[in-house]
Image (cartoon, rainbow, N blue to C red; front, side, top):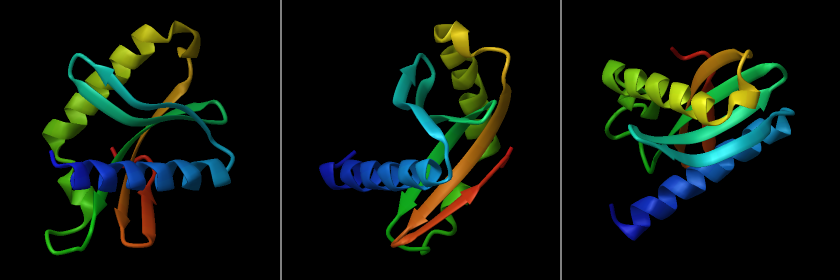
Length: 115
């Protein structure tokens, strides 16, 4: 991955984190790495743990960012969420939610409970 793509992704993740914080959510983790990959954002929204996959694009040329979160990617994110919970036992026993956030230009679009 090029430096420009990493910077674009990091910028999108930071914007989405601010979006959640503006709505009263707490960011618990960013770019958490497990054996199956990485969770972009882990947040607390009241009594709910939110695992958010962030897709940042410069245009809609290849479709909506959320469309890139395939069934295979969703399965991997679920596995990663279980790994995160195993590493953070104090956070167990909460509702879980999987969101997908798309960032294109200045727009941030969050699909709550996307899968």
